[in-house]
Amino acid sequence: MKILLDAMGGDNAPDANIKGAVKAINQIEAEIVLIGNKDIINSKIKEFYGKDNISEISDRLSIKHSTETIEMEDIPTQAIKHKKDSSMVVGFNMLKNGEGDVFISAGNSGALLTGATLLIGRIKGIDRPALAGILPAYKSRLLLIDSGSNTNCKPINLLQFAQMATIYLNSTFGTPRPKIGLLNIGTEETKGNELTKESYKLLKEKSEQLNINFIGNIEGRDAFSGAVDAIVTDGFTGNVFLKAVEGIGKFVKTSLSESLKKNILSTIATIPAMPGIKRFAKTVDYKEYGGALFLGVKKPVVKAHGSSDEKLFEFTIKQAEKFVMNKTVENMMEKFEKINSKSDINSNETLNAENKL
Image (cartoon, rainbow, N blue to C red; front, side, top):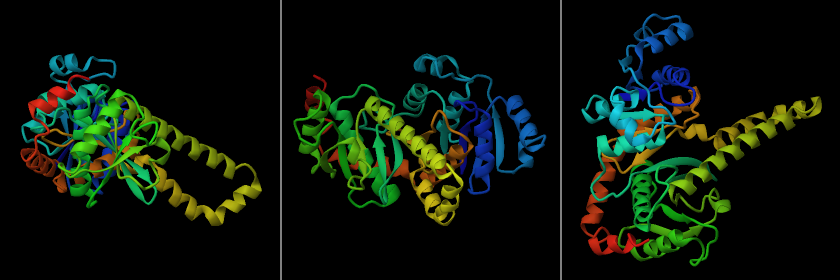
């Protein structure tokens, strides 16, 4: 198995990308190919590890040279079309041509979605691929879809997100009948904007037919209660929700740390409670859950957080190996096409009705 890693994408590239790969390599069985400018990567290898060649660290680490980088401010479609030797486009082409089994990037989200859609291709029947991010929840995990790739959605998209979430949680994590909620400002069926109200109606109408365990609207405050396995929303709302959660997590961690170290008495009192504190910190640390898989494309593409540090790259790489081993994308293709071949959800009549929004 080969994991393709965009070494030049992300706020902390290439340092965090390289260090994360080196940390992960002895915890996985796969090879890792770092895609980027070989001169820059080799100079960093020399600086960090005192080695002249990355293969001296592990014979399962290698470099694929590329000369360009897609920047965060680049226009996605233009970047994918014109920066053909960028680390991202090279990675997509390697994945497409069977030179790797999964591609990871912390770069421009729009470009990643565009590249995944144009170069890798969508699964038949899926209108828009979506980012599926995993977050911690009470005695469980929470899948957030879409967590940032589609800012403008229609009800048909949210219905398909619910389908993909159901298949993903069932095939990858063994959740028998994942509970799917629609993110909203209230639990009542009549709450929300036009998108959420129409999406609620469509989910309610089609859930039994499509084997979706739809439990209704979910407010943000109940998202982590363990009562729901996946939250469906548009990418704009989902990304705001995701970043707010990450910000709260950092606030809690910083505030707790300062409180425990406030004086000598609180520091001493912390010692016997430290194992429990560490368990709690590990549970709520989103970095433990790695990146977000692009559901809806024909091969595994993983979006790492733009601000990923070496720890997050390490966990994302380990997570990506599991995606391949569990045949997540293959299961998605097989089950999605099987379900939809028996339904009329993608019929012209249904799509035309939804396109009126």
